[in-house]
Amino acid sequence: MMRFLETGIAGAALVETEPQTDTRGWFARLHCPEAFAAAGHPFEAVQTSLSRNPQAGTLRGLHYRKPPHGERKLVRCVRGRIFDVALDLRPDSDTYRRWFGCELTAENARALFIPEGVAHGFLTLEPDTDVLYQISPAYEPGREAGVRWDDPAFAIAWPSAPALIGERDATYPDFPG
Image 1: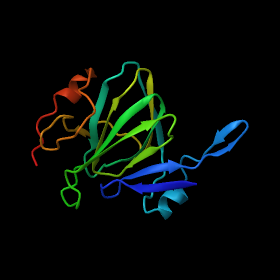
Image 2: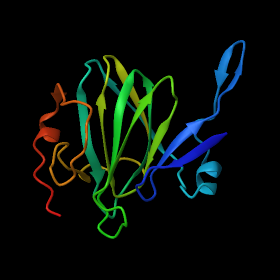
Image 3: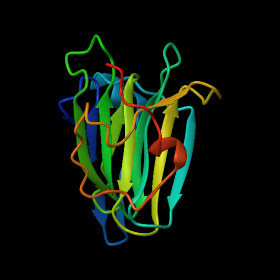
């Protein structure tokens, strides 16, 4: 069973699992298109990607896809810990320019569902952290966009400054909105 918890960002949800436990360990359903649709978050992943991050303090994001080629993501930490962020960039949304952050770990087995038009980024909180993405639709080159992680327009309360960040992510311009 999965529980969908509100995040304060329209269409985004924190997804919790209820593992079935026995002497062997546990088993949990992590994604079910019917359960997502019933919860008001229709999502059928067509691509799965893994981000491997050897260094604590690695920042990736904040990324999104330009309309009309938006994407939906289900993000889960499968090794280590991250501070995961969703940022609403949809001008017609009631939660425009609001952000939500939470800790995802391999142990808590939570995932963050990110709808179209919402930027995503994370900061690794320990070394050797792996992040699994389920994405829809499939990747199309040239549709990438992003906003700077420390843009004052959003005032995201990251737990710490990044120790490692890619040049593209570090140099996004100030948000024009």
